[in-house]
Length: 217
Image (tube, rainbow, N blue to C red):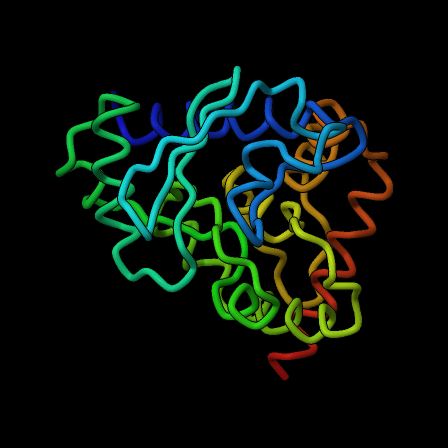
């Protein structure tokens, strides 16, 4: 298995899990493992037949659904990269040394915000290092500001626009730049897989661009 094959396999599972709840996006952060096991979330997880394997006690678990495995790590753990390498070798048959070559392991929900709002376990995803770093940290800063005004009493967080772009390998929007063909293609992909209106996706991208670059200047 190559790095790209690994990314494709993880993306297939991520998308399939998200599609189980039409009009929504995949779940990426939970406050406790009971949510991953399906407790209190019958509309979202019942059809996934979830089961949890404690992969590394106190720091990482593997969630198995009918669509495949995924790795969830404690937001306080700094061992997530090593844990993902071991997970990829065991569940995706990718040699450990390849995971440490040109690949970032990205938390699909910001660790600092997770700690602040009480989300303990976060889904992680392999992203090519160049693509991940090209997005920079400004989106994270702007998302953190906007999230302060949201209802954070919920027990789950869903995948947001910035993380969606990264897992799809779509370039970040440049300052003041127009949406590209890649962004329109991405909007159609989101519509096809999750039933979210194309114009709503494009509007979200434009709003994300404004928030991010307001922080840069």
